[in-house]
Length: 341
Image 1 (cartoon, helix red, strand yellow):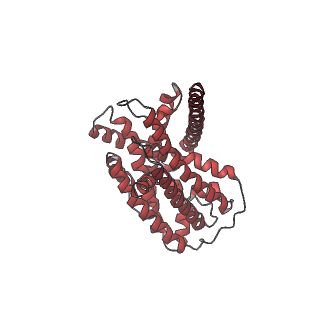
Image 2: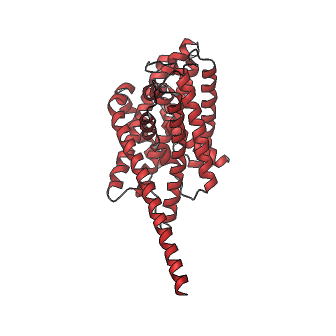
Image 3: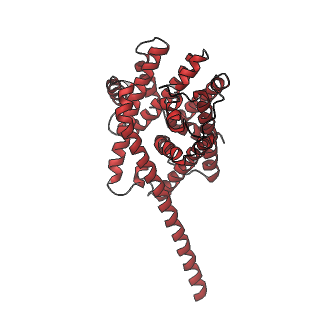
């Protein structure tokens, strides 16, 4: 059970970035929707956690022993190299955006300059840890984040605002397809996951993410502000707590993206050079500012994330059909041999 919770924490930490924790994404996608659509989104997010572990099992079973384990091998032909490159660029841009976002929050809420950039350094260093240590770290971060959001929710002036009446399922689908891929990539394991671990990971992910979505939706109170959670918290005199939640979420995403990039960089560079180049380049891009990066780069990243998710679903469907056909073919062979006997 602990292993499944850690899988879920790793997956969740890659999803709850600045857009999630500030409430801006929830306001954009679910502002006029009923709570049913939010619950559906949470369940779908959890289901994908199990689906990605299932993909890990497929790769593990079908790869020749000793051959490099690469998630992008599920994509057809030469498209794998292109999609891998796009994914790494998107991860880097996200790291730069989180750096700029942290800098902005530290400066506007806490009146501290350059702290966002400085926070990039420990985040990148955490990205060098092995995946088990990162899972343990994220388990603690997720627990603290949930506790703080719950505290903010029960003390928020807008916490009762569940009056959206829309039932647009496509909103939930779009939100989920845009957000799952980084977390999914990280939890794909190089070892087999048993059925119980897959199911529990999906359940933990669904329960926690659904709870977070509902609470942030409630805290927003129908606000269309750029950072609704911080605005609502400020109205209740708890702006710094809200800012702390956002910074925790940003830090988690920074580590997730750094880990993703190190999976590639460490094949070509040593740890020191890889970390130094990542900090320097992410800092340089972050100078463009959080709003500019989000406005110009995120629509493209969202589009590619949706494509990745769609291709992942196609792979699972095709593999399921192939496995079913193989199973029935095997039954026919057995039946034929029995008739011959």
